[in-house]
Image 1 (tube, rainbow, N blue to C red):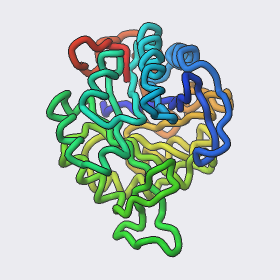
Image 2 (cartoon, helix red, strand yellow):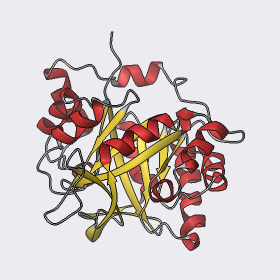
Image 3 (cartoon, rainbow, N blue to C red):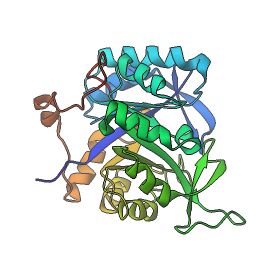
Length: 281
């Protein structure tokens, strides 16, 4: 048997509430993160991802509280990201109950951070969140045609996206959350070209994000090379169910974990830092 495809709801959290927009603009309230997390756990989600979109020092306490309350309610792995800049930030999140922590802008500014985190907490706890887009007309050409972006996909980092994924793997990250900024919130389907390019160059698991609009969009992402598929608004607003996504994957002859699998395998979560709960992504 192969490794089962993971279906992961993503909750963008702003000041303690879940929000969602298109290309990170026009955010609207999508509910309480702890309530949504509990619902997704019950509906068969394999993991959860929380992204702190305000990501300010002032909001850190709010996010830690959300993580703690979620860890008390759900028993599937939880990944948390947004504004993570240091070993201390990761330590706080793991102690609050996260299983994994995703890093984005801070690693672009100082790639050594990825090495430090992997050496301190283990690769299984470190996720690179990579916001990639096609190089726009007039932009700096990149070998792959895709560039790394910051600030919600609005600014170019001047780095080739595929080369950055390769460097992150060399520095010890255990997983890559691959966000298509061209597709974010558009519901036009995952960017299979981007997924395939990254898959060809890295061996760590790749989570496809950005563009999911229907259950039928999920199998092509996996067939392009994704190990997991992530979506937000289609789950939050009940446009698509986790069960229908898994059924679409099954219909495409792809392996998924069933509700029975979840019930029989509660101990498969990655280890966390001392003091961390086993309830986090």
